[in-house]
Length: 151
Image 1 (cartoon, rainbow, N blue to C red):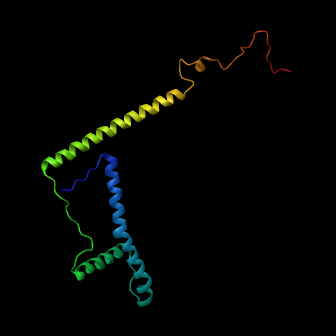
Image 2 (cartoon, helix red, strand yellow; image 1 turned 90 degrees about the vertical axis):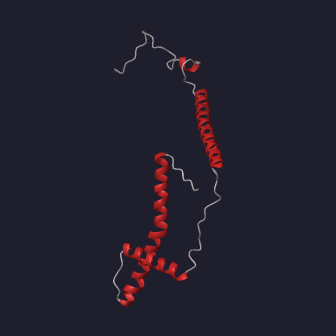
Image 3 (cartoon, rainbow, N blue to C red; image 1 turned 90 degrees about the horizontal axis):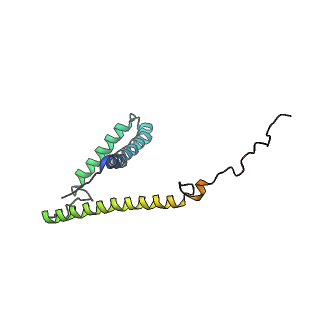
């Protein structure tokens, strides 16, 4: 049994990004290379028509399918299912994953609380401390002092 877990919108976006990357790497890039080689050598040398990127991808598909058919051995990469688990083993794996998820969440909360406490200790202008009650204007202006800019 193969299990793929996608958590929320972030997981969905990650899966889409990975899928697009695989598609670009295994389909678009070889198609672009096929198009470029066709246009460079066959158009200028033998007067063949130019190919677009879509036609290059189709050319790459034709080359790949021809390779698979002609080799008759299949791919060099094979996919196998791992050892299958019975229901009890799957339940224990799911329980362990849930416990790990809850522990990770609690550790995250504790870490944020520790960061908050340490930032509270470093803040000298917090209410109730000596520094916050001090006045920045040490000397009040006396009524007999005259301040004017008049000449």
